[in-house]
Length: 174
Image (cartoon, rainbow, N blue to C red; front, side, top):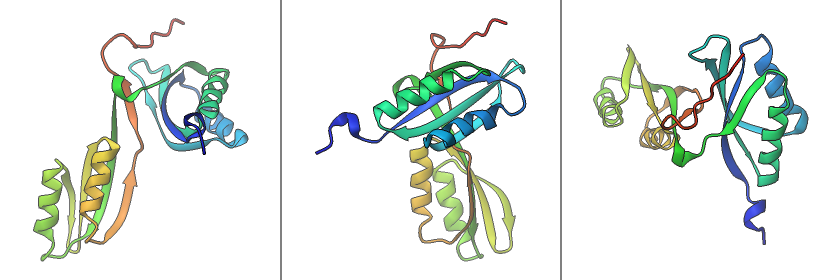
């Protein structure tokens, strides 16, 4: 019987790195070399263009997740790494979904999108493209409601997250 410590868990890491070429490749390479799993990864410049914020969702047991944090922290370009705990953070994901929709299905699909505050961003004769943002649970629930319709294409960004309040803001001194 596995103990709580051997169960597979998920952690969201916020990593602040120097905005240099190849930094994302070096971080993902570390995961690849060590056999760690990346569930999702997002990256974008911060308020200071010298730095990039990377949000990585990783899975593993407690030992693996601790190792990930320690190994990433050792990389040259990494200025800060910390866990974004769900209770102290806000997570969002963007999804774009292209659904097959003839005239007979269009209104029902639009109604479902409206319930989830989704936006219709493209209309074609046989399809609708919907944009939806929210936490992973919201997007998963939306996709379950589209189960009776043919999803032609789906693009999800992965989680982007920030800690709540001002207590955990990362300030980098050059």
